[in-house]
Image 1 (tube, helix red, strand yellow):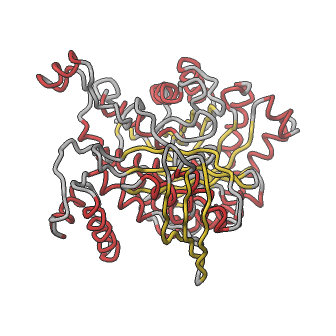
Image 2 (cartoon, helix red, strand yellow):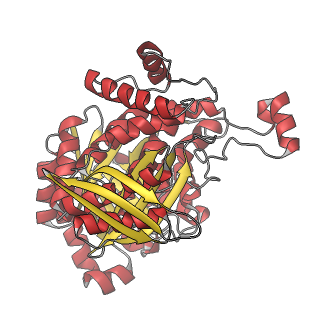
Image 3 (cartoon, helix red, strand yellow):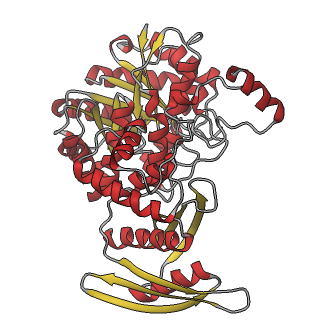
Length: 503
């Protein structure tokens, strides 16, 4: 049996998804959940990118134990120093350094010769190894590199002390057959390859990231890198949940591979990442999409009712998706609420967190007849979102109809000061957003608005995710309520608070 290591880059490459910006507390919450999922390595960020990223990586290194914490660094001494300063507190620190090896990158981006790339790559690994016990090296754009030159670079960094060699398909250019052949060639032709872990990092530009990663495993790779929900630059990375469930579900085929992943935590991890990043999961997304275990066709429904395996190759409970419809209501007590939390996997809440969640549950129960599992998950996820609330919504009042202009009045509090403002708009939500902007005295550029019902029924909670833009930076905000105007106002202020906190 061969142990496959799962390297999660949701907090680094995943956060590079356009429009995604996580604060330190949100990154910490995701990192803790990734540990529960059972990943082997968490790439916590790129410390030299910003002060915020440095503090996030440092916070994760200090607080998430029992898993390797990696930090990305260019093959530059200052980057490596910054990475080490952030992750030196981890139980299992790892510096992940990289340098491009394709001709187009060397000529157009690095302006380096091949000899300079080999020298710089080896020097970077050697220096990183002098600080950190584990060093990973990536030849950026590896799949478009001259293969003989790539071998020389890899031999140089292995000799310099690299413990993990990661082969990235940076632009998602490879096909499974090509990528598998490349990994096999590295195993057979690179001196010292048998002494290091061979890793792969595949992008999804052609929709082949998962297929390429699996092809690499079949040809000797021992670590696969990816992100939850396939987040990442452009079309994203290989989706961790898809890779894991492919190996688990087809254990008849991948029978020599073992994983330490707790699949029961997949759905919860996916939901948390979606909610905190503001990136919605497409309904037909494999494994975690809303339709992944849904059947509309009468033929399919008949088959599943007779035997689930006729049309389902996975049991939804395997990924932690509860199929029961047991609900709570306003007459439910604290004990029933706590039992439901345990059933949903929330077993490590502090007394303070539990009290806050129970109070929010009771408030919601007064406004909604039945509380579903997804309602409770939404309450807990909203509680975990920590943003410096510079502005707070105290109340709003709407006057709207189809025969006159919508008007919204809001009261926004900033510290001890409360400001009342009113504005008109093309509908109640637009009017509310305009009133909020007038109250804070700042124009906001709304670039995206997304509304969905968390559960079914007339009294379903609405979840609103907005994205705003300021100075070429994007900020997402999220709000939930049984009133979609209130949810919209909360989401808008959540994004604005992120924006002003980042100044």
